[in-house]
Length: 331
Image 1 (cartoon, helix red, strand yellow):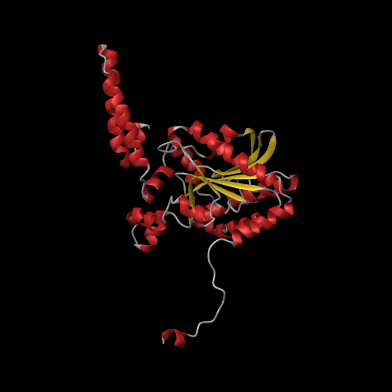
Image 2 (image 1 turned 90 degrees about the vertical axis):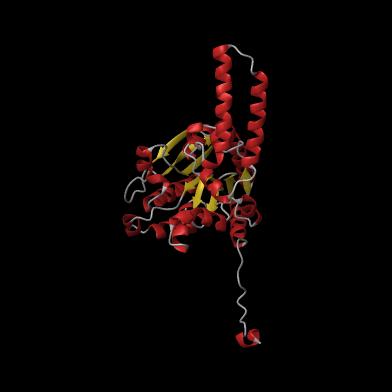
């Protein structure tokens, strides 16, 4: 854990790590044997880790999903794929850098990558628009997915956004229409589609590149119809109630998402989050993607479409249209 970026609920752990560092420094500078004290602190650190990370609240999971050191989409792409070649522009307006896309290889298999990307610092966040795509980002994604369809390339998409950009320019260029078209078109592609939610999966901003045959989610990511801040602003007219909104939305409840078929697999992270061991996290993600792509590549286009249709028809609940006599119901 990087002490500089420790979250509020990680403060007990940060204090123990500082004690451990002080003991190591004391041993080195004064040549004193404090090995027994070091072992005791290390044992306490492990116990505290298990206590903290096995009882995370919804809001704490949201904080982990937004951790500034958490691996972003490009980090995973660089670690897992070979020969990534980025392609730019929607051929209509401009290149939206909050969504990146291009071809790459996974064990010799050519694939098309579509990924939402955040920035590490202020300059990068401005460039990436804080991971909030404009309509041209979704249109670029659709252009590249159509290219993948043409050449028979499986599509792998990476979701990490609080939502699509809600600015005036975005609305003027019809961001809702761009997302809707992507949802429609992705439902009909005859190539395998695998989606991985690596951080935030907020609203239609996520769904615009996530209509997939398999949807995977990292242990400390969240996938929701709305971000907690937006939910708080709507329900309580106050964004400060975000933690209450997160609990109401059950953000980070991966068992619920899997139970209702929203996601197909929860990918485990290193203790405390992917930022604590990005290499281990990338290995877990790679193994999961390979497993699902192998299964999907064995299916014919017709089987893919049939299973994708059945997957999304099975989500949620619906009314059968039966008319209820209110007078009888009242009596």
